[in-house]
Image (cartoon, rainbow over all chains, first blue to last red; front, side):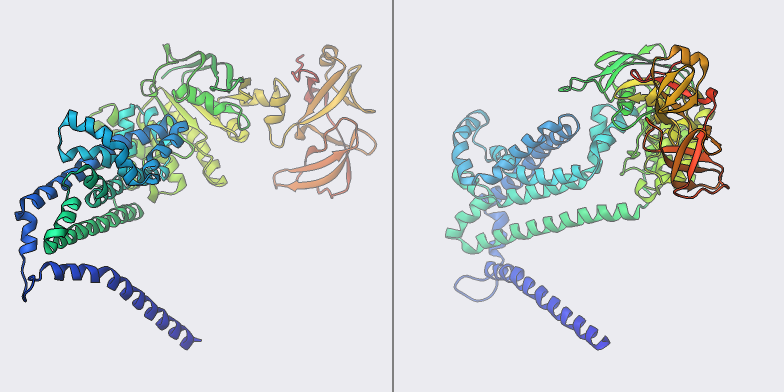
Length: 274
Length: 359
């Protein structure tokens, strides 16, 4: 019996190791290849850091990086400002509208980006007319694009607490609506808010269709453009974006885990009574 | 401290043609402990939430003291509510939870800490002040919820079934603690429960509701001794009062051909069809052939006393007749007991309206 169990556990360990290895190869080989390619001297031997230096030196690439980071920031902020209060309010005051909000938020998922762009290009004529031709106007389109994912994570966070009773308790203890939302509801859905933000950032950093069709020079668009003339630099930029996005996702899992762990351990909070 | 007045208060939900609470008139004295009790859906929680400002009042008025609070938002009513699921803020420690209302009221930090400490001492929570609610047992959470209300020093406590999530034993001990605490603090309290034992043991007065309508509001003993109608008679008391259909024939209630004596003055006022009510403890065993025969179905022996659940052969009696018996006298299943009662202990109700006939 014991021998069987040991053999079973050895077999299991082998399976696990093989599976992990397969995953590691699947994920790491392309990344390593990219790193290799982006540091190789074209048509010669040895290593060069030129493509990576281009990331900050090439004016077009540099400005596109700044644009994309700004877009990620603006999109995240605008999405949170629009969506979080709306969803909390719908939960608290107009639960009948929750289906409608869900439908509207998930709609962008069902319509292909290409179709959306064609649809909104007319609107964008007005946007550029009113706000100028800055690539940052893409924020509006991106907010729509990230809605479904942000909605999902906020909805899950709101569903995990009893918003209505918590709000009623706060109101009966002397809190107004703003206080209820800021001090009672928000702290309890914080993991959902952060994950919505991270997903938004990751999505914006990888979005190509909108930018390319509306002709805005965001990072993915420039990477695509560079791919045709300067492959190593383009690869370096892609790798940088990939690593950044992966780090974000890792950070995301840790944010969630930290929260869970803290509530399980229930360590005394520092700010008691303050 | 303050009185609470429901003045023809009504709550009509949009899309419904029957009010959840209809024409509620109730005066609650300063410092009184009033319990709202009734079956689920009777409007007791709605009535409480109307007082707390969490439910709109569609007609009539509600006053706290001399202040008309009918349309004031909850935060301006100076009340504190305790919820069935406690509604503690998961992200705050016990101390922060309890200090929440004081922070809202911008009470200085020193005083805030002092008041939280005082309440924690009162509720035996001192060692848990730094914990999060998740790390507490059900009973402790319940006490934190109470503490959060006490710290506020409100004019009125609103308690919505605060003991329902506790286990049976803890519920019994906590209910005496709450009653004692309320007496000590002297804060007017409106307490909602579906449990009539809780209502009877805790309340200075108990208001019984059914289908959104107040049936009777009186002291626990008066409710027990003089139920205003059939509903209250059946609802208050455990086990329930035996309600038997009968005919009023010259000072006697006739069940088929068996006679149960009733008070003469009541008999003269009552019509032909009546319903008589007899509490389980008011039956008296008599020798075979007299009184109502009851065939024993189940015997409950509780130690202090016992109950026989049986079927009576007499016409008009319900399926089950409940008799309290001496716990030390055993009765076997299938045995037939003969019971009667005394006229003074028989409640008489009009069959049609269900109203009590008073002498």
